[in-house]
Length: 124
Image 1 (cartoon, rainbow, N blue to C red):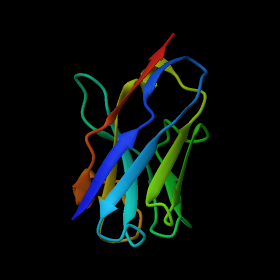
Image 2 (image 1 turned 135 degrees about the vertical axis):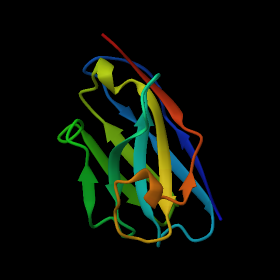
Image 3 (image 1 turned 60 degrees about the horizontal axis):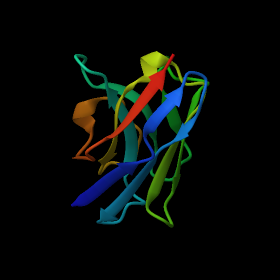
Image 4 (image 1 turned 30 degrees about the vertical axis):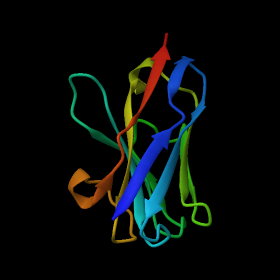
């Protein structure tokens, strides 16, 4: 069992930056693949970014490519998406997710554990 807790969300102006965090506890974190998803009001949850168990492979949704960067520190059981050049359309509840298989994945159904989310609001 893995418990995930997101933090770092908040209110930021368009063009600004936020660094989110995902803290993991429970079973060893280092072998798990990690993903970030977001859900805006009235919309379905969507993929944002994913990182493999060792951090060597990452992938991003086209909508955030070049603006968001995901990293992880397995010694601290932490993952960090850096959100730059934020736009109002990035406003959403952001979720951290972990999967037992260490390879990256973009489907919601590929993930086994989820956090409760942290709210990101971007004002225009």
